[in-house]
Length: 403
Ligand code: HEM
Image 1 (cartoon, rainbow, N blue to C red):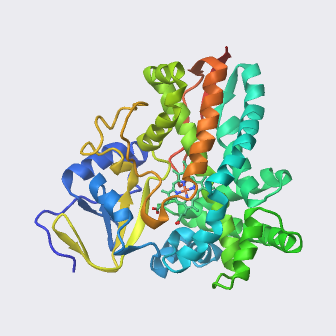
Image 2 (image 1 turned 60 degrees about the vertical axis):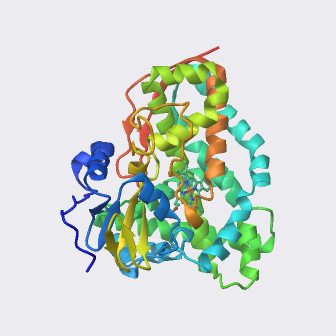
């Protein structure tokens, strides 16, 4: 038994329709009521900044969840097996080995080399939209840019973008907290397809290696550190998935929220050097990844409550980012907010590997968009995406005037 506590804390229900419409009102209620709230069976939910930030890097917690968790969320097919192999659900020593193999592609010098390529991609995608005078941010920029960048680092050919993109979105169904039966078959089919596809590319690299992630993975396999071919394939698939809709979410959310706040847009337009700061604020204001699970390995105490080993903790990143004990007026978008220690990229050993890349993509995109356009306005109300594991938009149509 976990230590009893005087008042019964509220339950967090991810499928509550009110939560789906406005998660931040639910988070505020949870934070005010208790440091530890109830989740599903055997789960506790953590909503306050101080606790979430500390627990993300707490060595008494682990990322590998019980096999039953993967079975319950993903069923008994390839998706459950895939989830158990990927970096984000590993602990030492396998996590260290895998992170080293993948991390090579995210070193600062690699990112610097990507900068020119991202500039070109942004300008290519922006040019026709600027000529027309309008763009649909998601389709024109926020989806294609991260896909092209992540394909480039992995070594996926340009010609295959359109075929591989829907598969990655289908795989996303495996990460939705309210996972439903119908999603499982879709995710299973996508995992099988993506595994075959990446497996074929790895075979090609075996014959003629280059400097991409696929080739690096094969080098890591040769080091005999316990990485199987299946590990390489599933982690490459994961990287493709992790690198794309998350950044799509950052870009589309940034545009949607900025256009709702004329004052913040004007501030950015008058001082482009604020863009890096603004990107951190977009990440805080509406985090693409709203929560992360951790498993309690050694008993921990939170606000006087003991939580015993084997319990799952759901860390609400989106809630922590809106805690007024940490942020002044958290419900307001403020592109000049400083300091801004948001937790949108997670923390500890698992801090997002692609944070630098996502920031770079967003920086180059906003520098170009704001430099080229003297006027940017909402064309139609943005439409939120339904059924994605990320907090993101399906459509953000905007009008632009060049100048
Ligand atoms: C705005 C964009 C992004 C956001 C908000 C984001 C967020 C996150 C979060 C919350 C985690 C979990 C951290 C934890 O459990 O403590 C994570 C892990 C990860 N992300 Fe990102 N991510 C983004 C972009 C990317 C990109 C572009 C890539 C790669 C191309 C990427 C690759 C990864 C990888 C490989 C991990 C697993 C790290 C590990 O477990 O060691 N992410 N990300």
